[in-house]
Image (cartoon, rainbow, N blue to C red; front, side, top):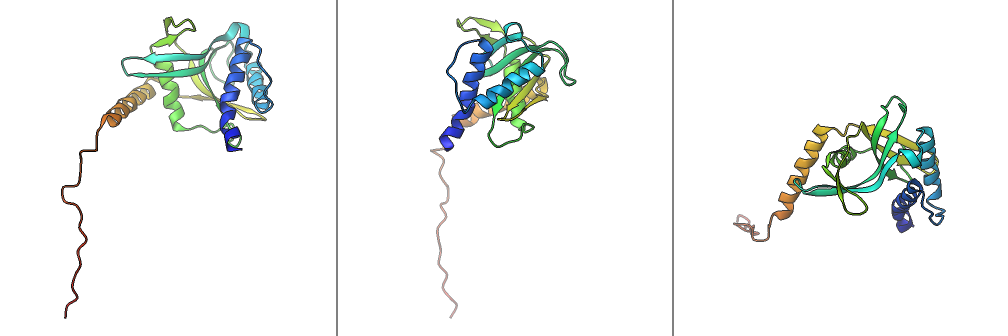
Length: 195
């Protein structure tokens, strides 16, 4: 059961990518309710997959900071959507069987900022292109019975924080702590009772 739950996010991503690209794919009974909510979001936001989807599952790279990631969806939202501006959006899909569609985590902001401000995107033919400017970045929480579109402040300050964490990660992973031993090993001592 846990393995089935753990795999649902990947299966939904595969189904969503196929839908956005207009590619045929075998029906997945477990993923279907989530894809229905994905389609509902596209309809509610007035998104035409043939004209408004810029890219799906696109790899972005920052060689200077030494990271890469995958953006789920670059999409043009043509009209303001629930008070959010029209334009090109970076959207990351999140799937859960238990969490409400409003749930977000602080690291989502950093993840989106890393994807948004990476300088290079790889095309399917492995050619490289500049990552475009986005008017916003959001998490699209897909649930079996509803969705939540959650714009997040994945701005340049968030990207600076993300880059500093990448640097810290490389530093920590490069540390070799094996040669560092205690100088004075703790020895158990016994006390004699006073006579």
